[in-house]
Length: 491
Ligand SMILES: *[C@@H]1O[C@H](CO)[C@@H](O)[C@H](O)[C@H]1NC(C)=O
Image (cartoon, rainbow, N blue to C red; front, side):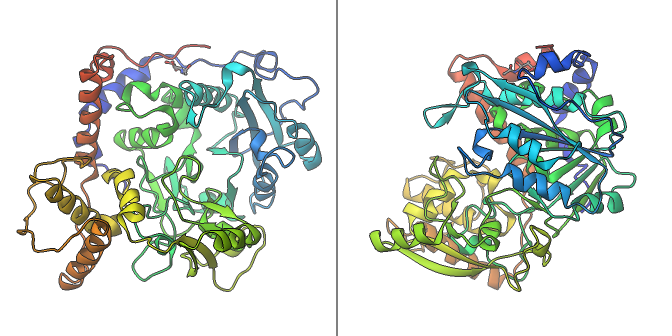
């Protein structure tokens, strides 16, 4: 796929900010970074290496086995299994609670390439307030990440920023070496629990002709992942890129979304991209696919609740308990989409990627499918699901009376031919009927899909955010941003 260079037309503001941002001086961690960042004693120092790949790993206690669900060992193993071995992994922790396993995990690996860059433990770094993210947590974490990026060895060609519970297939770095010549960014499609989030439960990650092998990496918000993109390190450093400084250009999106915002900015700056389409050597864990190949059951009953956003992987026993206790739940078996090379993960070699999946029996109802459609806004919808999404929005507007851009609609789909109430939508099944109507229409039109104009959608989305901020009398992020470059300050 060619890089979406047309992006710049839709985003003049971003370009201005980009130019301004490049003038700010990035905070280069001082030479005494060890005292500054690594507050605990007895950790291994940084390696003396000339790695091509610098992997910055953000982790916390939940990625250890003793207190959490694990994942860090699996990630580090997946790095060790790479067919390309000249990498370095810098780990960093920002949390209120210590990561007690970390020391043992790093020791056990006996691998000089793996080291702890920063361990910041303090109650001011608490990640959550109740179930929601604490206001400054992700911003601070990205700032610490930025400092970790600065400390990558000078030999670094490729930068990977990832989280401690992700996982890479053993050919991941090799593909970058093979395909990354002359490009600034290698973007992989990836396994994700947010694959087709507005499609029906469980079916949304099933393999089918014409659908992607995994989640399409579109290098934009809601369609990319931090760990799925391999960044040209020199260009990133030369342009003084900092994730933590994106607040001024994020259109009100909070810091946990800065991976997508960064990718959009790089696209707006015409970074040359190699898109590795339909190869999925990155697993944003847990995904339905990795749940399947590790023998779990995917719980897709509620993908919009805070606690289970995107769904979750549970054990066979947990699934049986749920099925026994909750008669409104059913189990189905899904042939999950894959690139045919899932075998590269953890040495697992299933012939077909069969995933057992729990869902609500009324998964096509407005309470389930409808809830997902209204939770994930238009920017998050997969192209394959846009027709159904549009139908749903249209019917929703009509139900609410008046066909202006009402309710939670994006206002982006006005002006489409509005049939006069020909559909017998009763309450409770609009989502299902909209899906069916869209599918029927697609048949008639020979499966033609109008690709969404993301950039105009996004402008509207950002404008809406800014209007809301203005209405609240809060700081006008955009206006302020136009006057001042994002400040790059030392912490
Ligand atoms: C992160 O650093 C930027 C400057 O690069 C600063 O503007 C921002 O306030 C910092 N974020 C937090 C949460 O400290």
